[in-house]
Length: 186
Image (cartoon, rainbow, N blue to C red):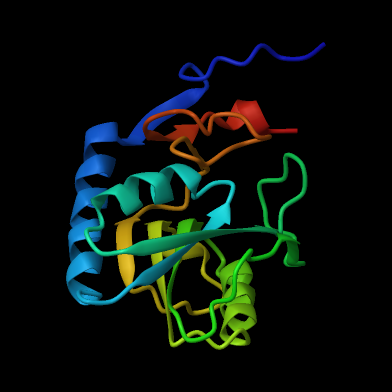
């Protein structure tokens, strides 16, 4: 029998409130706008988790932006650990050759997926390539990633909400919370 999902009840604690997230997103948008003043910027969202973050972030940026979407997977189904095998499920729609590109990520965990993506996108000859992530989990890092714009460093906990999921559920929560272990335990 399938367990009944309780979106907020399945969360053990709220790590970041909606107000904290929105405040930090606004700060990041101001910094990005200042750093790229007088330029056009291409935001590349790494689907699906970064979609809410990119939508909010781009509305705080005051310079011209283009957006593109990629879907990259290193997880399978309801897995809570990266497999290490990276697959591009959806590639860019437009060329980024000669463009200033900012990868917009929801969370950096081991760094393996993003490391692969950085190398892949550099091969498309952008003028510049930088990284903006909402969440960073440095305790899990296996590959060093140069983060240019960081929302929050978080502890090594399994988090959901604000785009982050477990089994494609919980993305629509307006906060980032720690999922109760019994929800994802075998």
